Image 1 (cartoon, rainbow, N blue to C red):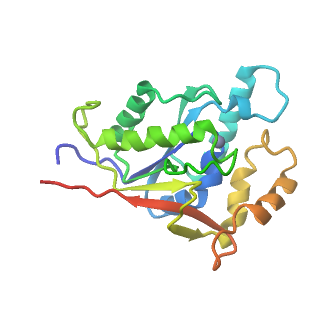
Image 2: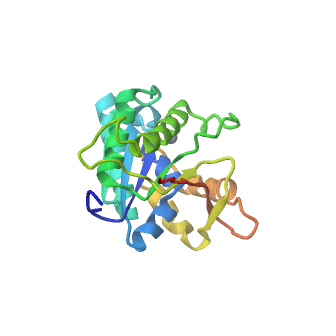
Length: 233
Ligand SMILES: [Zn+2]
């Protein structure tokens, strides 16, 4: 090995503050309990999804950042990287793919979490938000670029991610039973006071409509897990 791996870790990439708390907080918390360090990237500021009436853009950015940090703290995330892109306008830019690739090369995560780039069914106006679609493509392409020495060179060399965990997927192949952790997930989501002014109302809606996707589990987190086959010769 050219470089010693500093720690066993995962990297989860969302478009907005709260994406990762809807998608994978229990899975990430479980992995932290297993000994992984967890890092987050939030690509946009989330300023245009802020439902609280706040006058300035900077105030909305600040509120959403604080809420994301509070939620990440409850999960046990080691660090949150805010990329500062404009909410609702996320573009597929090489500058962003480069930043993601270099972060993957620096952190060397075994697992990377993101929205599912294979979701192209446009069945939900929220799930198929432009920023979600774009973040999924950027992450997928950054994972490829990270295993290449030359696309975006880094002093740590290349890095091969082992698996991608896609949340918000229409084609899950793995369900994590979170029936005993639903209160934890709701507590994490309650960090987003600007998004859910009437949290009890949201919580009952969430429980009734959004989580139960597996016949054996009352509540679950659903993923499409992709093993990345690495060929070395
Ligand atoms: Zn979102």
